[in-house]
Image (cartoon, rainbow, N blue to C red; front, top):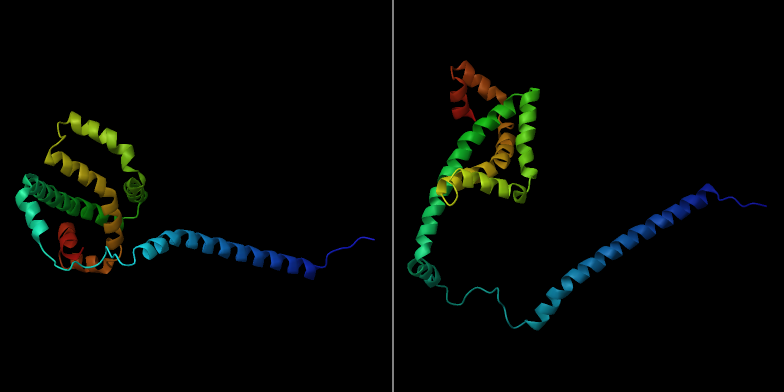
Amino acid sequence: MTTTKTPARTLNTMHNREIAGNVTKKLVCIALVIITLIPFYIKYKNEITINHLAWPKNPTLDNYIRVITENDQFLIGLKNSVLTTIPTILLLMIVCSMASWVLARYNSRFYVFMYTLLTMGTLIPFQCIMLPLYLNMYNAGLVNTNVGFIIARSGLQVSISILVITSFVKTVPKDLEEAATIDGCNKFATFWHIV
């Protein structure tokens, strides 16, 4: 005589296994949280009287003043930061906003391919392009110059800038651009005033 499982018994077994699996997952997660939080609890218990994150009792600006007055390289670093950041931002704003406008408004295969190609640059880690970038800058005589830094910094930020700005341009209604065209704006005026 053979025994066969009834469908109700099979469903009951499957339900019990599902419950056991869910309970196991939750217990593992709770154990991982406890293991992660134990060092913080031990540190808190040992350093209950010492608070390193408290606000200073006597706030002062002396450290800032000392860095500016005693460090000869601080003003040079500040000057280089300003001289490289402003041109980089201006270059990215002009080039990437225009490219993003075109990529957002035209939907032919070429523009979709270009958008995909430009945004895939965000997937390439900097370590992969570090050596070729340095060799190209060295051959062009741009190593250790502000111009070389501006070019490198701008080039590395193009893909993420196009991704962000294109997403913004897609939210601007096309009706506004069409109204500007009816009012007599050319392409550049439409871009400048609407987008």
